[in-house]
Length: 400
Image 1 (cartoon, rainbow, N blue to C red):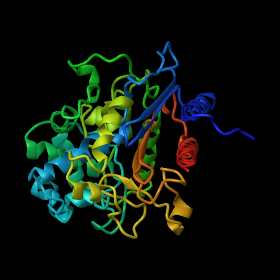
Image 2: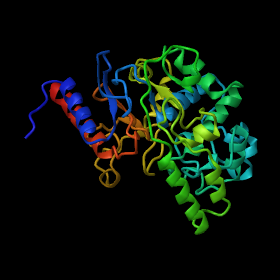
Image 3: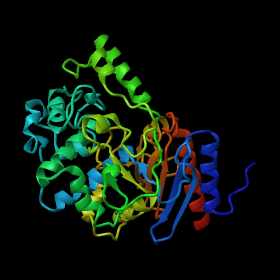
Image 4: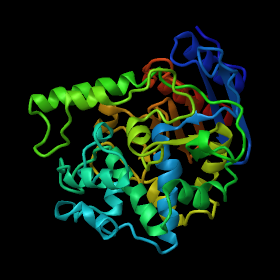
């Protein structure tokens, strides 16, 4: 039997070492941030398998889908309290090119993943640039009626990014920087960091060796298309188009891993593309504390409470919200925040091996940044759940 860790530092170190031994990633940082200001950050491993540098609290990670809740969500909420838009506004008010069949989709639907848009499409195979992407999404048939199902959709957050660009008349990276990152002094958080002229950074955590995983997704999509399994009117691609793409071959370092963001949108999108450090994530999550005035209290409450009712999985505005209430839903599907996250908990994950979960009842936020896609994609699900369970249990034991 394993003895109880003597400290939270020991526990976090043991979990990172376990992940390294099991080849889940080459390096990572775990941060436990207390509402009272105390924080514990532990970093282990290397940035890459080839002459990598030691991971530390200033290592820059590709956040992947954490972009949705660190850049796009807060920018939308600040825009709402600035009078630029409303949750009940139709997306076609800002992007009329989407057309008649998308006219009932609201900002609320996009934030809660209830728009009826599909989860993913490989638009990057034959589309490039915002206008092309808007037209592609306009042509894409809905897979459900708005408000009637939860389908976690990259397309929906792409649209939110385009909305932000139109209402502020500026590119998304600059919008997020002015509204969120600069006010919060998030010095190492940005899109396309290799092009940044700002603060120099020590190192990037490497991601995949080429885009093998998403290449296989594209091949699967083509097979479904040829078998006529995709909805009528969905994106059409060809084997020739797939082969003609200049697929990356080497280790991806400092450029976004996600293919729609990299190939199609020049590294800047509402769904992916953001890079950050665990220190900057700590600064960001302070806006979600109860006494923070950065985001309006009512908007903040809506963001981390269940907005999708009986639909599954449960979503707030942007955030996944806890399903740990003993329901059948929880027993069948679980929650990425683990078995012990309180009913008021909320969080999000990123494909590259990143996650944030906040537990207001315990007064803590747990952030995990790893490069679980380097050099190949590993499954972090079980390990991450163990980390959450053990950390929250430890916090409880200390507070008893």
